[in-house]
Structures are given as structure tokens and as C-alpha cells.
Length: 270
Image 1 (cartoon, rainbow, N blue to C red):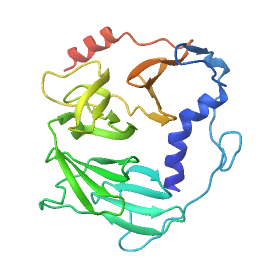
Image 2: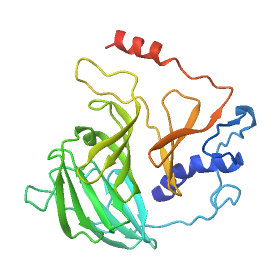
Image 3: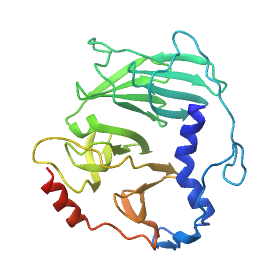
């Protein structure tokens, strides 16, 4: 059920786009009246008005597959990969719910990780890549958990990332849950050395006291080579394709918050 809830949350943005019959090109801003958007209190399981298809996956339960705190779920090649933050490992199930194993190589050995903040799957080489924020490394494993290699990097902002997706064979799109370092809400990262390629949408204020804060848990979706994401305190959804961000559509009866005013208020409260 948690898997289905996660899928529904990821699909929520797609549902809005579908029901608005968005047909504009990337070079245009599609204006839609907020009053014309139907407020949805709930979606019945299997409702074909909102979901192309749906099914329940009952996960196998045993001593090795118990889940404490789901921080991230990815579905790839008919398998479900779940990052359990409570025990710092990746659990793997198939689409029938059968437990297939885990990646739980936590430790100090060369082929292990010291900590785990999240992961992404690389469909171009069929690997799973784990972020170790303590050691500033990214560990590469096969999808069944065999260690391959690791890359040491200097991008401290990756310590605070919450979600990452491959957007081409060389780059990932990241959502960062904290503003402590590079101050970007989203960024495009080169996986060759995990350096910053493009910072997108900075937080409105960076504290002078070296503390971090999270203003929002903004989502993004990746579909057909395009990322669609939200901006803080904005009435516009943006898309990023080939490293170019453009307005996707806006809600024309909602005004954006003045960011200079917001930054001033945050500074006063520092």
C-alpha cells in the first residue's frame, strides 16, 4: 500500500496536466484558470479517469525484508527498490512483492558505505548508485548488489539531496532538501565527478549563521526526457529539457510572492 501511495503522489502532477488537456509547446506558457481546475479530495483505486492502470503489491514479510522508514522508492526493470532510512539499506522486491535481497554494505571497508542519503538508478549501464554523505563518495553497484566502483567528489550539496533522476547518460537532476551549501533547490549534476553543472532555483535566503533549513518539499517528475518542477512561492510550473528551463504553465489567478521581501524577512529572523 505504501508503494501505491508513493506512486500516486508521484503521478499527482501528471494527473493535473492530463485533466487540463495541456497542448502548448515548450516555447509557450499555457495559462489555465485556477477556478477551472477540479479540486480532487480523493481518487478511488482503479479510477480510469485519473489512472491508466493500477495494481496492489503486497510485499513479502520476513526478518530480512521488514521496513522501518521509507525515504525513497524507485521502480526499474520490474523491480521495486526501497531505501529504508531506519537501517540505511536498499531493499529489492519484484512486482509480485517477492523479496529479492538488499544492498546493505554499511561499514568502513573499501567496498562499503559509511552512511546513506539516497540513491539513483542508471538505466544506461544498469547500475544503482548510492550517495555516502560522510565520505563524499558515490558507490556504484550492480542491480543485484555487487560492488563495482566508487567516485570521490567535493560537492557537499549532495549531502542534502532528497531525490535524483538520470536525465541523460552523463547527468542527473537533483532535488535538494536543504539550503546549507550551494543554496539550490534543484541542480543538474555531472556524474563523471559529481560536480555542479547547473544550479536551478536558489533558496531565497542563505543564513549567515551556517544553519540549514527547508522551506518546502517540492516535487518534480521526469517523463519523456523532460523534467517538470515547481518553483518556490511561484504560480508557474517549469520544465527543463536539454539543460534549458522554460515556463510550462501557470495558474493565472495566483500571484507570486515577492522574493526580495521574503529574503528581507528571513534575514531579519536569522
